[in-house]
Structures are given as structure tokens and as C-alpha cells.
Image 1 (tube, rainbow, N blue to C red):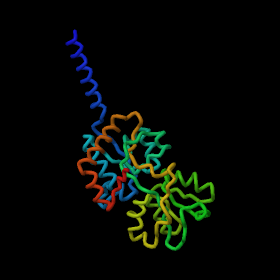
Image 2: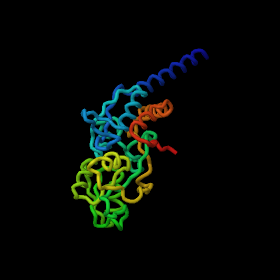
Image 3: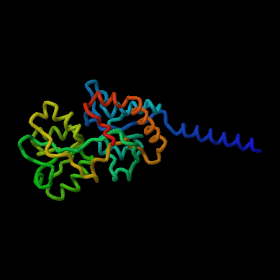
Amino acid sequence: MKKFIKVLSSLVFLSISLNSQAALPESIKIGSDTSYAPFDYIDENGEITGFNIEITKALCEKANVKCVFQTTDFDALIPSLLSRKIDMISSSLMMTEKRKKQIAFSDEIFATKSRLITKEGTNILPTVESLKGKRVGIEQGTSQEHFANEVWRPKGVTIVPYQNQLQVFSDLVAGRLDAALQDEVTGSYAFLKQPQGKGFIFAGEALTDKKYFDVGVGLGFRKKDNELKEAFNKALVEILADGTYKKINDKYFDFDVYNKK
């Protein structure tokens, strides 16, 4: 009888293990807003690439899951995930408390600050007093937009939403905006270091309201897809340990974007 129970227990354990493995799909669709260089963008060959994309591809390889990337506007990422148009979000998505009520997040993938960009010599600062009556462009659906709509807009700052970050920079150059609010790395890499960014600067210090910022970026999952989330968390530990993360980091940056304390 004891032998029978032992065999039965082994079969149950094996069944649970197989079911756990079967819970991971062979292929998943990943949504990404490709207007956020150097994290997520379209290269000269029309391919989706960037730091975030390369990290995600490395995670997919470790998790043994085929990943298909799908360009998705930032404000459509969470709705697309919840409606099952995509299976995961990999798109510089800050892990705010508001978003955690809707979806599950992986462990932190990287962290970046939020900064205001203005034309040099305007003396504009990222404060309500300085921005009152001014037009600030922000990509819709972002943490920056959430902050600006709750903190700046009620006090007289005009917040202008855009479907993607490239449109924000274009209108800033054209003079239709007084300032733009976005993450620091994208602002530097995709604008200030480019020819179109000549004559523009970061204004003041980074925004530090912890309700909206300094929460890190993670991959987004449906809350019930815990096995998939944990597979990617395990893969993250592996690429941090074997040097893959550092290799990709050093390809794009001269500093540690992981920034984990």
C-alpha cells in the first residue's frame, strides 16, 4: 500500500510538472510602441529593434518561447493585452500603481528618469509656475501624461497629447509646443543628440514624484498568465547572470540602465 501511494504521488507530481510546462505557449505576440528610440524603434531595414527589443528577444530565447513583435500605439498597449490581441507588452512601460490594478508586471527590466525639453534660452522649468499658459507635448497613455493631466493641467498648463513620441518632437521643432515631457534616455538619444534637436536642452531637474515616476519598467502580462510571467522573470535572472544583459546594455549606453539598487 505504501508503495502504491508513493507511485501515485510521483505520478501526481509528474502530472503537475507537465501541466506547468504545457502552460507556456510555443509562440506569443508582443506589443511594442516603436517611437521610443533607443528602446523600441524601426531601423533602416524596417525591422523592430532597440535595447528593450533585444533584451526581450534574449528573454524569449531563455524561456524557449517564439516571440512575434507587433507595433502598437502606446495608449493601445494595455487594451490590446486585455482583449488578447497581444500576449505581452514590451514597451518601456513604467510599473505604476494605476497600471498594476489592470495588469501584472515582470521584475524590473530597466529604469529611466522623466525630463522636460525646451528650446535653449527660454528659461522654462518643469514647474507649474514656469509652465502656466505654456503648451507641453506628451505621448498619450504614458506616465508622463498621467502626471501632467493630474498635476499640471488643473493649474493652467496646456497639455497636448500625441499618438507617438516622434510627433511630439516634430511639433516641438516646428514651434507648436513650448516644451515636451518624456523619459530622459529617449529625449537624449532620439532628439537632443540628433540634428533636429540642435538648440534644445533638458530644462531643470528630473521629475521625482514617486506616484508617477521612479517605479522602473517591466514587461506587462495578463494577471492570470502567471506561468508566462515567472518564465520571463527566471530568464531575466539568467541573462543578468551570464552577461547577456550587460552586452546589450553596453551596445546602447555608456551607463547601467538596469539601475537596480
